[in-house]
Amino acid sequence: MTSMRLTWLAVPVLNTLFQIFMKLGATQLNGAEGAISLQDALASHWILAALVVEVVCFFVWMTILAELDLSRAFPLSGISYVLIIASGWLMFGEPIVALQIVGSGLILAGVWLIAGASEATHPVKDPGSVPALPPAQLGKDR
Image (cartoon, rainbow, N blue to C red; front, side):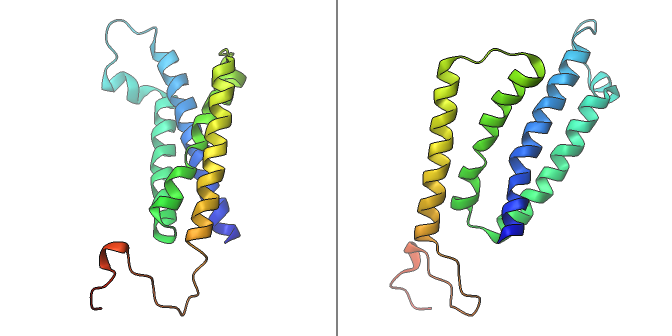
């Protein structure tokens, strides 16, 4: 399970990198005359890096979804919001206000609660056990 946790941790990190690269690319293209074209965007190494990171993140996410329940995996990706706020402050000097700090704390608390609830209601499965039926299938013949 440790390797799955490390794999899962890659998702918020990759999402944060994607946003950082997009911000750098948008800043770089901001000096362009008129509307930004697809050709301009694809000429930016920051935008290209963002696209590569997003493709890698897609495949990591598919790996995670193959192993974890969606209800357990997706809420944990909320950590990206906190990482992006911190990255904006550290890398771009963006101000952080008290409400963002409180909101980040609430997000982290929510992620922690959801993860705890998921572990309580979705214990680690015995590889030899029969999978549980979803509520919609209870009472129906197998």
